[in-house]
Image (cartoon, rainbow, N blue to C red):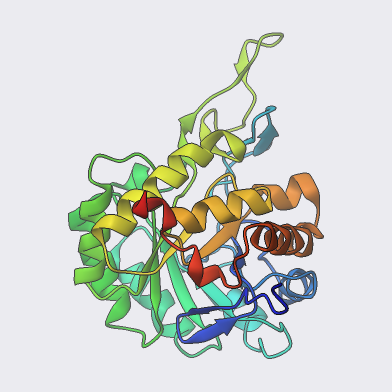
Length: 308
């Protein structure tokens, strides 16, 4: 009989009480929201991505549920670096590690945000280089290739002492090469994966795309197999911590990601479908699944799929 289940995970020099992390883009806009997520059971939280200058983002509608997940084209709306520094200047009451997220259109932008974020209490930083729906950023900014990854990660790492996670796209031909480039440039780990896209859905009554921008990134259960495959590939090829993100909605999904090789698991869309209680509920689901299997620690199942 297992008396004590160990769900803790050591990541970027911190001990997380469980492996569940709030993904960037969902509820990460203020300290109060981050604190609410932490109080509801998240092991760590990620802020919404911040650019040097404020961004309005794409016109509404920006998010649409379609039965198998979400399609969104928010366009990196954010208040800009100056206001973000004010908002996240004091993180000691959040109650769990906080990850800062950096975006930019050029190396200088990434460096400027990194310099300021290095002064704050973030436990780690994350840089998404694979957004599929925002001009000049990610895929539409030609940032999702090994050469760009190396340049951007090198610039960030030279301007911060904080561990850096690099968020990569799913199902890319050069996925492993991007991860290796990130590691060579000084990255600490990989977040796999970003939204899939660009995708589009059309309103047949108006004959126009639903989203204001037309195309968007797909998230939720529809992309989980791509995310699991990406984590599996990266675990075999790159000796770095991996945060498995994409379509995780249940405790079974978390276990699946960890068996593929993830050190921790990001949750985004499921917050919208299951509510803030999703973090505590999934934690309880994980505990039950481990008990059923006679496993006492998350570490005991990490990478298990590679042993078959």
